[in-house]
Length: 508
Image (tube, rainbow, N blue to C red; front, side, top):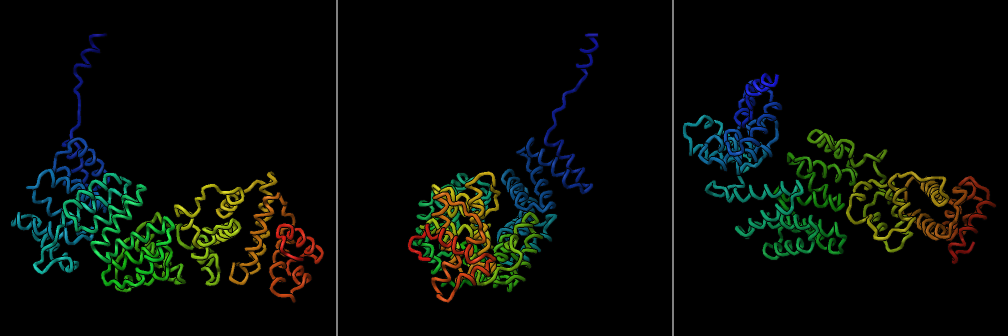
């Protein structure tokens, strides 16, 4: 029995698959147009035979068929680096760059292919790419039709992709090498500043941008990046940079896009809409980010139809954005007079030195069309030592539940019920009724600290309303306000007196 087992094992042949094995399996799947299976086999083939240019070329072709153009370019660049004499790689590099809209590089690779393989299989297609690229991006070529430093631009794109993947140290090394080789490559300088900013080296990032502006006065990308840095850090210098950007009138599409996206990111939606909409009117075929910012800019500047059209285009390109529309939490377009939708007013409250004003701001935040933007901001809601009531207010703004079994939380909930009753009077906060809310949150701050129970929210809302209105208009009577809020005049008087304890200067 033991000998029989031994004989069986001796007859087993070891099987160690190679890249060539998976490459052939991939080719069979390609004949059947089974691209996902071919992709799977080729990916395995590249892992087992990473030095085989033929495998990398075929992998790049399959990735193009699957519309994965960025990955296809990387695969084809690898193939080219492994064997620069394989002319067909040049053609496929031309093709993938054309798909990516990088016409300068597409033309260069196609031209190189034709020059190196006059009788090549893809000469006709390569000539078409050259012709198309020159028609599409003629402004990128000099008087002799020669492109400038396309390899540097490729390296910059590689660094940008590393940043998108969160590999900032690697991107920094690559960009610093680029700058050392080409000191006037301003795009690399600007991307290096972004990379430093993302790893927390904000002073180094700003120093790089100031150096660019010193050596290349008026560099739009540097100014826009500087505005974004000041915005995230909540620096006073932001307004100075924005005032400068408002004076710039660019003609180049890329500059209009950068300017519009920057204005949208920092919340200057009217300016953003002007530039992004101007691009759309001129037939600019944008990427998902373009339609994202156009939709936000249009929505927040009162152009609902354009906002929805842009968002529809965005979700066609990126279905994952469905459900994140700027109006997702709004039943209708924000009223033009509603302060909760006035971004600058809201931010001013959230940044206010007085706690009661910050509480008011957090209440507004819960009703604002800018809520998603604000809560994603790295600094606005990150108070170093938030008080209990500020923590409650933020939770309330974000829709977190409270426990009625905890007296402190129950008191807070009643205080918010009173605020909601005041809000329902006009269904928004306006310049005319803002004083009522400011008083209410001043009272809430003090009363909460003294363990006030906030019983009878309706009467409390009426009392706060009366305290403000009567101080401005002597003809306002307790009976009229009591009737308005559905309480008795006696009950109103009782709660005016209770609230007055938290506002010593008020006389009932």
